[in-house]
Amino acid sequence: MQILLVEDDRPLAQGLQKALQNRGYTVNHVTEGKAALHVIKTERPDILVLDIGLPDISGLKILRQLRSKQDMLPVLLLTARDSIDDKVAGLDSGADDYLPKPFEMTELFARLRVLERRLASVKSSAITIGDVCLDTIEQMVTFKGQALELSRREYMLLKNLMENAGRVLTRETLETRLYNWGEEVSSNALEVHIHHLRKKIGDGFIKTIRGVGYKVNTETA
Ligand code: CA
Image (tube, rainbow, N blue to C red):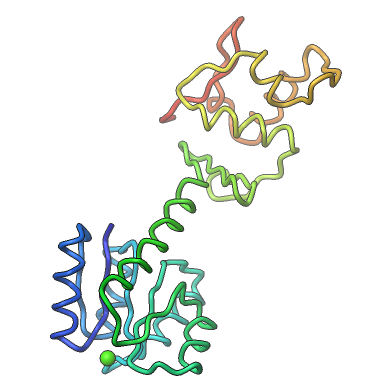
C-alpha cells in the first residue's frame, strides 16, 4: 500500500513517515501542494494523507481539484484546526476521512485500515479482462471504455463467465445460474444470449467449448 504524505511540518512528517513505514506502508513525502499534484499524476499513490494548511495550495483546494476531475483517490485530511467548519468543508470537498491534530498514531492507523478495506472492496468489484470491464456494484459493463446496454440475463451470463475466467462453465451450470428454478427455458436460449453478447463485445471473447459449454480466458490477447 503506497501512501503519499503531504505535510509541510517536517518533524511531524518524518515521525509519521517512520511510523507508517514500520507498519509496512510505502510512504512518499512532499511538503507542498504543487509537488503533491505532480506525484499524484505521475506515481499514483493508493492513499493520500493530506494536510490542509500547506504553503502554496491548500489541502482543500487540492482535494476539490481531484474530485472535480472525478479522481476518487482515497484522501485522509489532516488539520491543526479542530473546528467543525474545517471538518464540514473537508468532507464537503470529498475527503474520505478527517483527522484533527494532534492525533495518536493508533488513530491514524485505524483510519487508514478503514480506507484500505474500502479500497479493497472497490477494487474487487470490477473485473477487467482484455477490453471488457464488468463492475459488479454498478452492474455495468464497458467495452473499450464504452458503456454497453445488456439485458439482465446477458449481464448475468457475462458476470458468471468473467468471475470464472479460465474455467469452462457447462451449459447446465450457466442455465441454473441464469434462470429461476422451474422456469421454462427454451433449448437454444443460452445460445441466443451468447450470440447477442458476441455482437456487443466481439466474437473472440467468449469461447465455445463444443458439446460442453463456454469459457472466457483470463487474458484475451
Ligand atoms: Ca501545515
